[in-house]
Length: 419
Image (cartoon, rainbow, N blue to C red; front, top):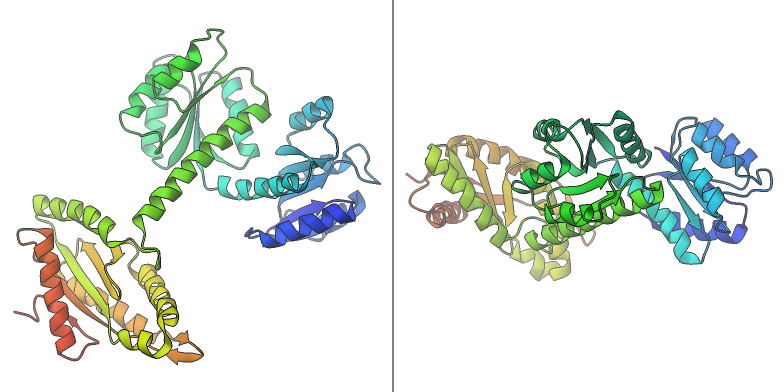
C-alpha cells in the first residue's frame, strides 16, 4: 500500500492531522514524523513507496524548509504547511515544484490540506489535453498538470487536437492556446462544442496577447474559462480545480438522478429511456436483443420474518452481486424485488444460458441476515422477441417469469420453453 508522509513538530497540529487523515477515505497508509531526521528515516524504510507528503515548512532540524527539498528530491508530490504567509517564500516553493501552499489559519486549513491529497488521488484518473504550437509553453503547462498527477497528452495545433481527441475519447479537460497554425484556439473550441457539451469536456483558452476581448471571445465560442499568459502556477491550479470540481458535481448529480436510492442500480425510469435506444437500434439492424426480468423467490418472507431493514440489507447485497455479474449490460431495479436486464447481441438461448450461470453463482453466495446465513434463489423470464414495442417485449419476459414462478421458482423460462 502506498503511504502518505506527514511531517509536523507541533503536537496539537499533529493531533488534528491524525484525526483528519484517519477520518478520510484515502486508500493510503499515513506515516508520521516530527523532524527532518525522522522523515528521512521513515522514507528509507520503504523508499519510493510514498504517494504524497504533507510537510511543515519550519522544523527544529530544518528551519529553512530543507524537508521540502528532501521530499521533492524523492519526487514525492508535496503540500506545504506554514505558520505565516511570505510572498517571496511562496514564489520559491512553487518554483521548486510543490503541489500547494497552505497557511495554518484554523482547522479549515488542515482540512483543506487533506482535501488536496484527496484531489491528487482523483487527478490520477483524469486525462487532460494540452494544445499549443509552442513547445516551451506546451511543456510548461503539461508539467504543471503532471505535478498534480493528471494524465497528460499533448497536441501541437487544433487539427492535431481533434485527431488526439478521437483517439482518446476519455479526455475530460482541454486547454488550448489562441494563436496557432492550421486551426486556432477559437476555431478548435467552436468546432468541438458541436459535439461536446460543457459538462462533457472542459475547455480552457489561454493567450499571451494583450486584447482585453480575448477572454470574452473564448467564452462566447464555448470555452469554460480563460487564462492570460504568463500566469502563476497557483492561479493555474485554482482555475483547473474549480472547473474539474464543477464537472464532478454535475456528474454526481446526474449519477444520483439515474440511480435507485437503495441499491445504486439504475432506476426504472432511466432503464426505459436507455432500453428504447437499444431496442430501436436492434430493430433497425435486425440484431439480437434479449430482455430478462429477474425476481427473487420468496423475498417477501424476509421482510415479514426479519423486518424491512434486514430486507433492504439483503436486497442491497443481491443487487451488488447482480451488478458484478451483469454490470456490462443494461441492468436496473424495476420494483421491490424485480430487476430488468437488457442483453444486446444475445438471442434468448444464449441469454438464458448466461443467466443460468448468474443464477447458480447467486444461489451459491451466503448472505448473513441478523446472524443467520441465507441463500437466495431467483426466477427469470427471457425473450428476444422484439414484437412491435419495448413494452410488449418486457410484457413477454414478464409472462415467462410468471410461468417460472408457477412451476415452483428457481428456474429460467425463455421463448423456447413457452412455445
